[in-house]
Image 1 (cartoon, rainbow over the protein chains, first blue to last red):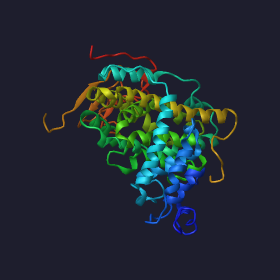
Image 2: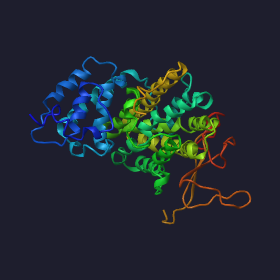
Image 3: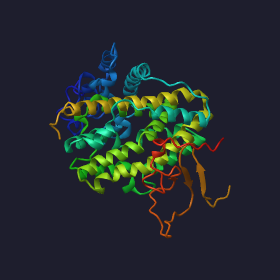
Image 4: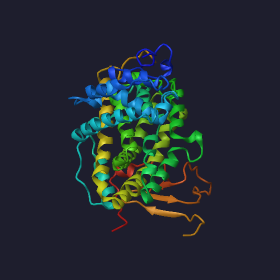
Length: 356
Length: 69
């Protein structure tokens, strides 16, 4: 039994993982992927831990243990765990555990997220339905707060919260490229090529964001701030990873990207204004200014050429396109509300500042 | 389709003109304008703050132009 996750901690690489477990399931998974797989490695506790984590749980989106677990399981595919865990990527028992967590997470999202009426499967109708959906203003806005009120410390927190996705910007949607074909695939590649700097590594959006973080005195290495962000921040990325990595959910990842791009250009102008208000120059605001121009292009391609064409090619996916779009707005709305509520109550939106 | 990468200009409903291909955008005095991406969106509602490029504000002024009708 010397190779069980519980006994090997002292010898393995677990300390190199950029995160700390938040409950029994994530403890087990973090312990596992921090060591090398071995024929004797006993994964029998995993199934029960997953069952216990999801049974009767109607708040998986805000469950720290579940969201950290999903984050680690997806991290095996992204390579976002400090490079560790590659040999675990296709372990059947971990894939089974992920599938079980995903089914529960997806069921919860489908129950909670308002799904708009399904439009006709035409480019024009789908683009129009997405425009209507994304035009709805839901309550006080995070971008207005950042533009007008955020303190220097809150601006840093904003970057920290955003870094979980943005330091890997575009990656979750790239999983969809080989899962699409024809016009929607070409449209997605057109957007993603721009996201990845179109051959210029220094213009990759994730890299521009990393420069913004460093210019604001933050650590831009991936994962540095995972331990301080709440479950909802991880849930936002985990949802994208789930949509992207499951071919049956390709409609949802397309809808997600469309809604993301369609609600980006104007807020990014306001985010940039928030940083300019505190005297920050281009080294900080480049990321936001780039997104005003880039996402004004991407949103057109995403709504018409990506989502619209996919709807025409695969009419059965229209409902999921709208679900994915609404999921983007709803879940990112929850994450934004968490920041807004914390800050209006003069509290930090982070879990603990120990690791900052 | 030729292999010369012809320039295409496509109007998007209630939005900008999307321009693809090998082209250059000049200022009114003939200077090349900075271009940060391969595919660009040109403002056609008149309110963009980063003209000639689109910044998405056509949505705030409810710009309407449906070229398919």
